[in-house]
Image 1: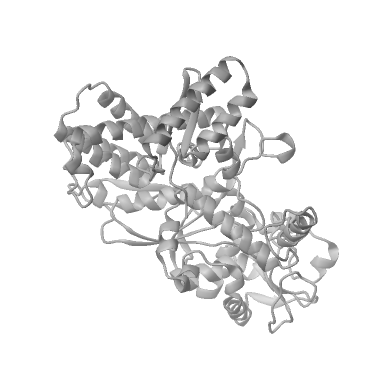
Image 2: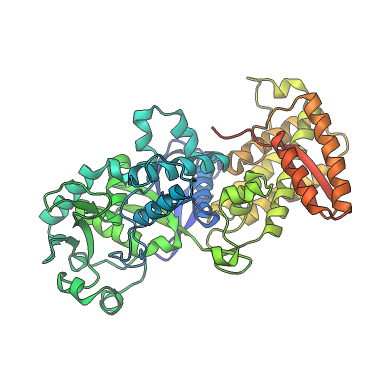
Length: 525
């Protein structure tokens, strides 16, 4: 009997997610199931970096794999636009409001004549700007949730990628419920706190004990004096001077970060989730607090599985702008990398292992993607126009491709073992690559397999920028000129020519064996 097993952070062990009786095809193991998944998304006070996108791409691949197994997946990903503090490692937050910091940076840009918003003093404009920029990057990275988001009516989009500032009334209602059930109280400072003592299992996700939290909760003595326990965290904070604030029964103020995800997840997906995802830095305090709030409200388990990605390092070190190893998606695209090579690099390692990102590894990822695209193009030519025609029937898979699809799914069923799944795929593609003349029926089988696995990877059959014949001729000429410049070590000229080629709609790839070009991806909307 085939099983899908995932590591469940809540139970600190591998757990069976689903099983199918013998004889049921692997891609039907979840047929008829509807799965509800909530993914912690970006905070829209700056551009998302590649570490953020590792968690987002993981959640995307997880959803796509479950769909490959026959499930219908309802995924929700928030875009946090209020409540984040610069010291979010504390349950109660601390330091400055991150959006207030973003506003100050935007005001400085305005003085320098570079601000992309009309009024940088308006935090809503600043948040909206970064939210739009995130959506652009997310489309470039082919996050599947954007397909639903873009296809939805404007009025429905907030139930796919909700913004906390549009759900304030729900947060207030949930806070009132927690007070009524004895899980929350108004402190001596007028702040509404969650009483962790009312929830005996607080700490089971992160492994933190209440005694440990008593000594390591942080914060000033005055803050502790207003609480029943040093680690109690706020649900609503009255503050007439906060950059974003709303009226409430406890005074004008703003919601705590943790209650936002609890409330929006349950409002949109219901009181019980199948999976909740995020980065490992979300485990404590954010997800620990989400469990306490949600289960305190409903008395029911909040999420059956909690799945977390490990940290991403760059060249063996933590990302830092001062070290010059801090990358956003647009930084890397600006260096000439295909965004889907970035996607492939982020998804190709086990999500529960720390990832060491490097530009060299990104070149390797680009080469791997190119090899799969080359195989797809060969198969398309061999299969003939009937396979490529819109609305044409999907060719049946031959036994070798059926076996690889089965193996691909079995590897991913083992805690999303992408390294194992890709190992199977590339071993097969290497063997197919040795065949000089692929028969038409086998070519159709190859295409069927590649389209199936690309439903998870989404790097092979990406829409490409259309190029006219005269543009192709011009690109070839510029590539020859660029090769001469590189041989002469005129790297400034080489970079100018690369930029000119990219403006024409091509992607340049440099390697030790030379330089090649391919049509760029069609721009994201």
